[in-house]
Length: 196
Image 1 (cartoon, rainbow, N blue to C red):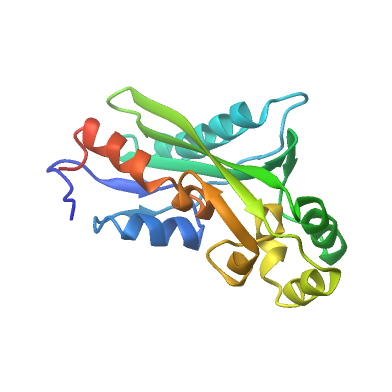
Image 2 (cartoon, one colour; image 1 turned 45 degrees about the vertical axis):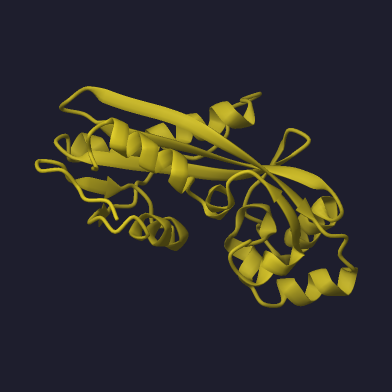
C-alpha cells in the first residue's frame, strides 16, 4: 500500500507485538529496537502530557544511537477520571481495575513521536479514544483474569484479544486502543516524506 522513500529507514522503538503488527499493516520495512527508559509518571503530570513525554523519550533514546534513521516511539495508557490505569501488578489489582471500568466510559490515550536526530525533526501528538465497557459480573472478570491476558495490559484488558468481548462501544480510533493510531501515524509519515 505504502512504500518507503529512498534514503529513509524506520525504527520502531518498542517491543510491543501489537505495535509491530499495526505497523506491519502499512506494508513497509522497519527495524525493532526496544528502548530502556524510566516510564515513571511525574508528580501531577496530566495523562496527555505523560504519554507525549514517554513516547518522545523512547524515540529519543533509540534515535541518539541511530541519528540518521526515522524513529517511532509510542506509549498507550488507560485513563478513568484522570487516573492512569497501568499494567496490573497481580490478579487482585487486575480485578479491581476491571471492577472500576465495568459499565462505564473510559479513555485510551496513545502518545506517539516520530523523529530524526540528524535532520533535527521531531513530531509529537496524542490520540484519544473513548471506550465503553459492558457491565461485567464478578465471575466473568475472574474467568478473564484466569486467561492471564490482562496481566501485561494497561487497564487490565486487550481489546484485540479475549477482552474484546467486554468492549461494548468505541468512539474514535480502534487501532489507538490496540496501541498505535495508524491513521494519524501514516498521515505524519506521508507529510514528512518518509512514505509515499
